[in-house]
Length: 235
Image (tube, rainbow, N blue to C red; front, side, top):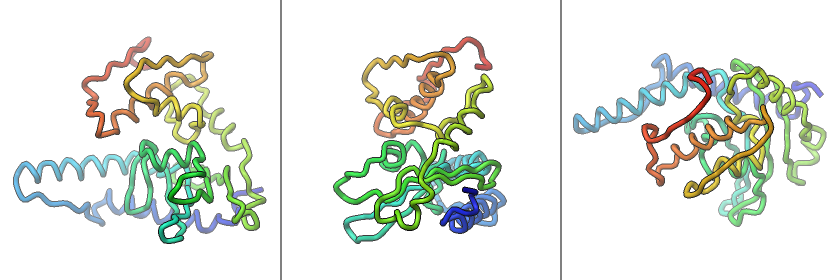
């Protein structure tokens, strides 16, 4: 089935168009990044936040997100859709893959949370801001009539994995599997050894674990206190 035949292709194309337009407008200064500081030190912190946010948008521009989750909230019986990307873009309902709640749903299919019900997990392939793949890897029974024919196949995952066999390290947030995700977010107060054959992604998992731990404010980890040992600087 071609991507244009997917029942939600038009919706996902509009979502991507709106997101890329927002990113471009912020980078070009057409949409201001809100924030003000009453004192000099506050103003300096706000300025750094704006600078960092724009830098993240620049890095996210070619691939703003890798997937979507639909969630039915028990409190108001309302379906919420949000997306998973490398960086959070709150106004576009995009969460960082390092955000525990969003990532738990996307990577581990946690369907039994007490406060709601998981309806959809969708993988979305975006290359240079171009929508090129949609795969639904979890579809609730209530959506089967509409989305049943577009159920997940391994084709998209296999294509992505093949792209990553060049010998260089890659961002793997689009291909993280449940077991790998559990390693990435394992408790920090332990020695963790990851074993595997060459090319199985051990180093990528370790680096993404480091990024995940640094993202958690409660741990108070700082990049200057992290040591990465490799065979050379290029690695």
